[in-house]
Image (tube, one colour):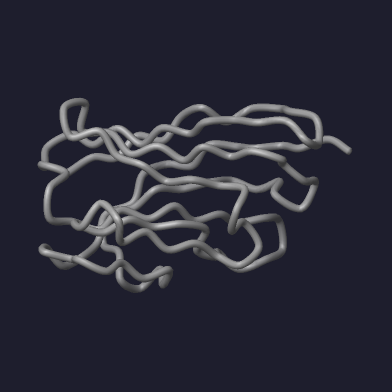
Length: 126
């Protein structure tokens, strides 16, 4: 399986970006997909994830109400819509697929994900 994250860039505080995670070599159905980020000098942290149940999304407290995760089964792609961006959202963002299949409720724990894409840089200027 290959995951390809894209959509990062430079945006002013208060702006929006939409990240995409294209998945090749594996169907999207059944797996949990997570978005993680890592800022310089900090540990990787979970941002949002979505399970096999379309309503079973989870968000970090820091992005709740600003970020929305969604998936398109036809395009086999997971999106992360990021609104009201803040300077502290600056990081490299990664998408990942869960180790287990039939993940109804996802977890924002990196150890639960076995397949990772390369990161996409998001920079928010204040």
